[in-house]
Image (cartoon, rainbow, N blue to C red):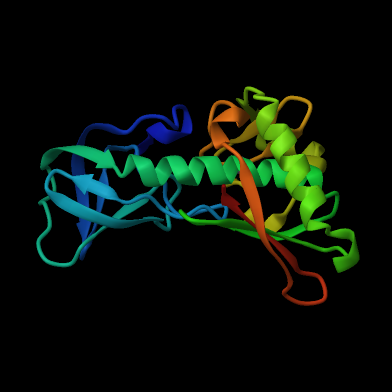
Length: 229
Ligand SMILES: [Zn+2]
């Protein structure tokens, strides 16, 4: 079980850490700034000492994070190292992740899925195609960007979340449960939902967005894809 530093500060780029376990090409640390794939957001890449981290995944246990190294050599358990994420890549993920919160506020329909990669991000909606107008969506998300609204994270208990189901837009990208608390991300006046991902501090930091594609992925999946302009 590691101390997950990104939960309280998404802007931490590096720290000192100790290797606590090695599983093949994956290592666990006592503390980490690496976000593991989850909630649709890609896992971080970076370095542990001179070892290259090519992906980060959740382990089967709560708060277990597996740093997947480039195959070859591994540090040994007990080794101490400076760990560092690829910040430019993570910052793009944070900008695009926060952009999806804006998109979800613009398109008023149930969310059936989502994904955030370094170069683009999408949400899937259960909605009729005719109601998705590219230029209108793009203009509205960019209004939210230009509003330069500060984002705010807070915590609630699992029980409080159960009592407020409207805080979970989609089960497919639901935040992690079973840890007695769930994080809420609020963009005042725009969006409020349970989310375990990493976000930028202000919508202005996202920069302008482009809706690059609107496509049907099935009867209940209409996919809207965003890129940073
Ligand atoms: Zn989020």
